[in-house]
Image 1 (tube, rainbow, N blue to C red):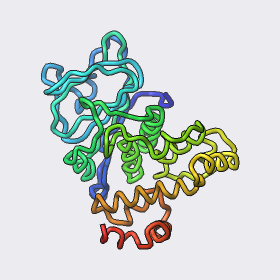
Image 2 (image 1 turned 120 degrees about the horizontal axis):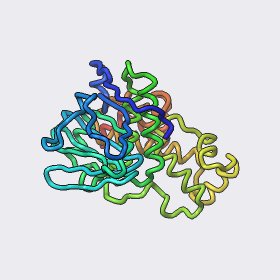
Image 3 (image 1 turned 180 degrees about the horizontal axis):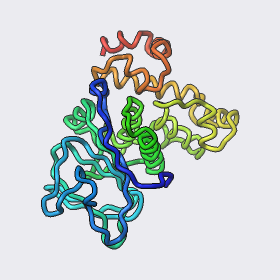
Length: 293
């Protein structure tokens, strides 16, 4: 784990963050040794008696990095192992603890916002008994560590950047249909191209370009582009652009988020880049695309 010392941060939430689709309220990670009491009493906000359990006024997303444990809700008990991610909803009674035999290392964030509440109403979270069904756990953990590192470096601030990274985490288990694969990966036999497609569709909301994709999969840029075209019929850059346009179109269709906020959430650098991409893909501006759908 790249993070060195456990921490817990309560983040300030300014009024401007209420306009974000998601905003973080707390973040941290913990390492509990085998047999060590849990929860730790030195964290009053997070402490609860096992017999009583607890409810939270916000969402809680956590990832077991090492060890294991159990979680309970009103309806079920679930054993947790390393690489399991779990989610609690606002107001949902629950309790969780590490195994006394193994302890655990746990990363977590607390968040709220209009979008996750809407996803909750629409049953969009792809969960099985509160445990997230994640297609690529390695990437999910890397994104989680990146977010916590960003928070730990700036614990006295809160920003839209944290919100965007949180959306990236949640995207791993937001599904239109259970078991939906990342676009195109099931038909691609070239391992490097498949890895490139997955990287693009997981990270292109951030600053991702063709050289970055090539470095990620360990293939020379020209070689990757040739193999990518052979396998998919399009270039790496075209795949990045298609992914961003698709993400923006989905946000325009399914949310009331202002276009100026969608720009960066979809991975575009400016309003003009988004407008040009939509004109090329749909023959209309983002605003007109929203009106027609």
